[in-house]
Length: 141
Ligand code: DAT
Ligand code: MG
Image (cartoon, rainbow, N blue to C red; front, top):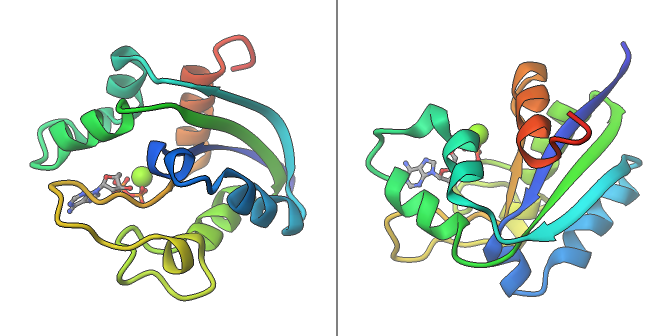
């Protein structure tokens, strides 16, 4: 095994609720290293590229609107098996189903909205990680 890199996003609901520190604490105390970190409001080009796999799904317009509604924090994290490891820390996509102990299970809940707001994104494969790092950190991709 070799060290991997993953692209993490602290979504606008995480920033708005003041949960950056709590989420980054979990990432760092797990032992992953933060290689890059930037807060900004995403452009529609970044979001269209990032969520290309979901285009056409019923929740897609709400997803792009939510992700562009305020600043987010993009992070490159590095460590052994960090891609699967961060997704374990994040928990299941739906916060109601996410296990207690996970970021989404402990800190997120469902709201009556067309899109699930679940605080964080983590790349789901090495290919996705390379692609997503190129979107959010083109100077490092
Ligand atoms: P994940 O973020 O766990 O990788 P995903 O890539 O399938 O999940 O979906 C991207 C985001 O879109 C997800 O974090 C929340 C939202 N979403 C996914 N499925 C949804 C659904 N059925 N209804 C509403 N929002 C959804
Ligand atoms: Mg995904």
